[in-house]
Length: 468
Image (cartoon, rainbow, N blue to C red; front, side, top):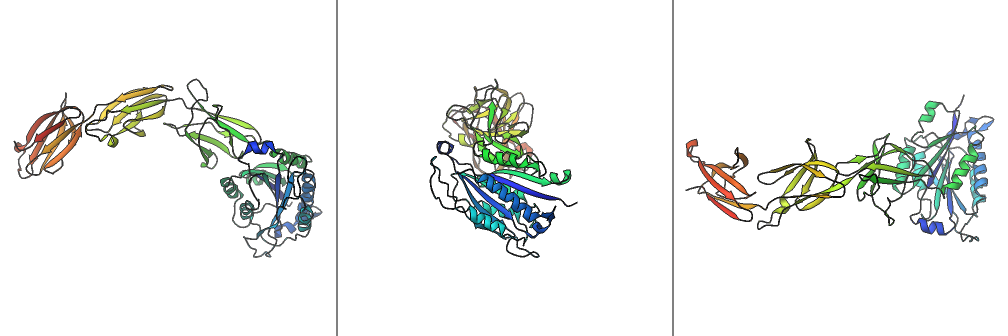
């Protein structure tokens, strides 16, 4: 038993000015992409695939032409170069959208004087070449004069890509141009395995179902009114959507690839902004908070508004240091980790404030010596401020090169850093009591080690001479 399919892809170019579209009765442009490739000559019941496709095309265009706000154009592929070998670039806009002819009572420019020519070109189509579906769909994005109307594409084909292309990739390319991909697949006698191959494309309809045609026609007619939309609710500690100004990424769960990146925002009504995106893939949304948070898997419903909640309660962690005499604050950074973990979440600059998910954090401030402050609690919408003292300056002078180190005094001696081999050295140290251990390179006995104790005060210079 032969298997045939007719595939209908509907793409929508959503206007960026929805208020203006709503104000005027809207034009809907429909581009038909018609398969005239060699495979369409095969038998289909008592007819052929090409004749069945033509009959179905006439039925669709007659039905859609009743809407006086619609404009039409025709692209074909596989109609020029005979197969074999065929030509994978064999796709062409045959009948462009006609220029506006008149304005109806609703104020909409229709321009419908090309319908007879479109029907004529389809009736003359003879199956000839190869089937470059991906290339044809990608090229079709250039067939629309502008993005100020609802722009749709209906592809009629037997669905066999013969040029190594992938409709899924075409879908991605069109989305990158701002086209929302709305595909509808009509299949005849497809097995579950064959149907599965179109999961990346869209919704499946059975050709033998008598309601299929009316269902798709209704969906097409309603597309200009029912846009698929979503909003991401970043929830605070009370589960209110008050958090915002966070980068968020929409991932295709099946492919594991990102599809969209947005900066989350609240609109002028202080509600999460509405996004108009493709309803096809199952998404997971990652909010790039510190640390990241994510949604559950989300499947959008075509023509509906879907809320995507993500728990993201946040507060602020501020690290401050007075601007001292030795102005090197910009060089000091702080490593932030969740309490009792070793994973670095962020490296924060001194004298900055950063948002973190509510919880406890450990800090490692990269001063000399390093400062460790553990279990800093970040609370919802509050600022936890940690202040460290200004540094003092140590100036070390010697008559010759040597080896040595700086140690901080306490219950135990804490190594701070090694001295360089120069005869004049400068270090910026936190306030405290220290000692220098040093030996000249020319003296080969440990007994010649020189020890100097000193104290560091904020914003003061301390001199240590290693030859007395």
